[in-house]
Image (cartoon, rainbow over all chains, first blue to last red; front, side, top):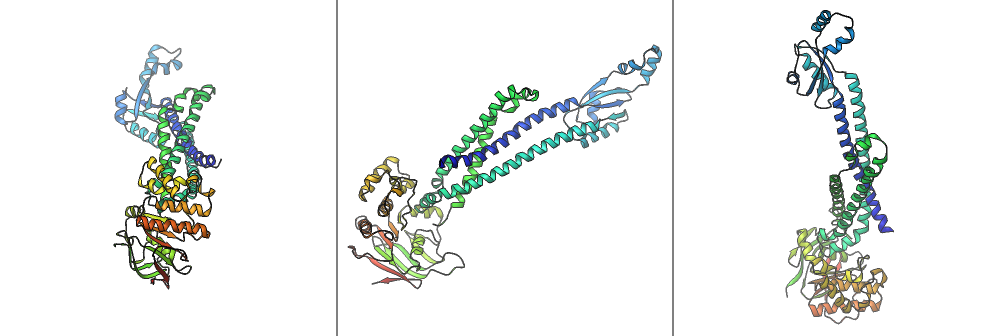
Length: 271
Length: 224
């Protein structure tokens, strides 16, 4: 019972850290695709005196990724009903050229202002409308959610680390007698701490396995049947096989640091 | 015979600012000698023993054990030196979560002997201290005298050059004490092991010739 309790007290905070890491990975992947969606859904309106091509816009700012000409005939068609063809032509000739301009990434509002000023600096550009306020509120909400989640993950990580250190103190006490006796008889550091390493590495594997199983369940059971569109569409993003490697490497790194901290703090302790 | 231990102008203290426990002590111990170190309580007998196995670094002077100056020794060299020592404690210092057999072969385990060798040696050593039937038990299942015999067996496991014993019979009755003295006498006589015993009382029945050092007023003196 004591053995299981000792392991659980180490495995649980380790799982909490691994969950934090995996949530971070999942969140990073899903937000990447969300950012992509926002980017693709966004375009600014540019009005020019003469026709302009994509390369003309790109020459003004490197973040411009696409341009789509808005047909002037479509704009005029609604207001030109019942007007003679010659008058319609006059209106068309008087109208400037309209473009929907897309960007290569989701850019902060200050970056957007820079693009606007770069475009307006060109003599051919008559007007630029960035739709900055709706863009800005979407960006701010997105950035806030991202920050809050990262803060929560960071906080969870710190609390878990404290729990691991606390458990290390218990281990240190439990193994102190054996390690001191071995030290008196000349055992080198690695031999003295061999048992601690074995236990900690075993716990790292168990914690990785449990965390991976939890995310595999989320991916294949819960997400698939949740009925939540985003979960079903982004199912692949929820857990990748490479994540097992990342989790295991993280768990091993944490336990090795933890064990070394115990071993070195026990070193040279007098009986 | 060559000196196994040589102390010159040795001063020992626990902390930098603390008072000295041993001051300007000079003595040497030759190979194969049996030496009792006595003195009043708190005189520094156990402190001297700790210094001899490198658990306390001398504040001043030299303390040479097995050719190594313990006032200035690297950790790796100290570890190696300790593998040639057998150390016996008043409170036995056995590892309670290990079986008796595993406790006995600790020095062999540290030296990297195979499990087969360790098992064979465990049986031989436990037979020597008359504890063969207890090999699979844990220390807490044994009496104090039996636990100390395990401690002696562990100290003898690797045929050490020197045995250091700190009040080895301090917690034992007369019968168990005599068994322990016999075992240490045998080690000294048959294996030419140097034996240093810190004790408050020299046993009345003791067949080997021995030297007697006494610690008084921070000094170490020969008793003739």
